[in-house]
Length: 382
Image 1 (cartoon, helix red, strand yellow):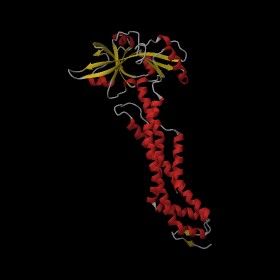
Image 2 (cartoon, rainbow, N blue to C red):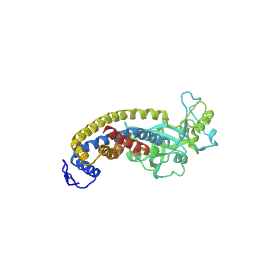
Image 3 (cartoon, rainbow, N blue to C red):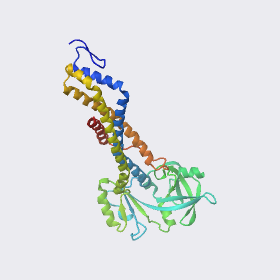
Image 4 (cartoon, rainbow, N blue to C red):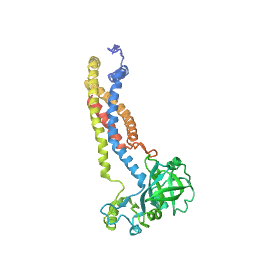
């Protein structure tokens, strides 16, 4: 075969038709950069939104659980009274020796008011509990302490932000209005994290359980019990057992799966709707682009056929080109989806919670499905 110059300027000299076609397509991709970027952008956007839509529910659920864990820590089951309960107080003794319970701790929750001036006052939520049990269930980081080794009597642990705002240190005394009376307590520790995570609204304080319950004339009683299990898979059976012991009281997990599911749907549905709209737009762009590509290449394809390329060869090369767009665009789309997820996780987080961990939550299966969606979208559209 002699030398032949095709219409695009590619020289053909004793080369296989397949190599000639591939060289031509690569040259064409480089020359038509704007169209190439448009197709890649379409695939990337559709894949990225599909990935973020499928994973935003898990990300939101993790944020929801993190907020619950700030308050309840590692609690598997919480027991509380409600309006139908026989008493507002609970006793811990009935479940102290139950099997499968690793730790059960009573907690007395109340409130207090701190006045820093004539008109300025700050509300606090007080938690009366055993310090060692509290550190096992929902540990806090003690920054400074003075007298914490004997956590009993009129003592309190306060968060770092509160102490910094009002100028208190470990060992200082503070006056709080509790149950209508002004009480003088000693700050035995300044801490952060856990229940003391800065939320920008309400401060917490931890007191000995006996002290706080006595201030409400309910010494030895609690208004909630936190239960940690040896085997978390036994949570349903343990709840049933505890319901028999604490009849008329609420016995449940700290977070409700149905509530999380409803909240997830309110977040994911708008995302999925937007994803399908973008997907249809991307399909139209890709279809139109490949239609133009095909029209442009008809004369060149005729030339390739004249030098020995079969119709199957030229068709397969076009399909491989679409797959190449799909693979590259989907890979970029996964990166875009992760960026969108991280932005959304920061947006969904309560802005006043400073120290809570926020991160995108996704699984390999979600990444694989999204990648396949992008490739298939491009392949089908072309």
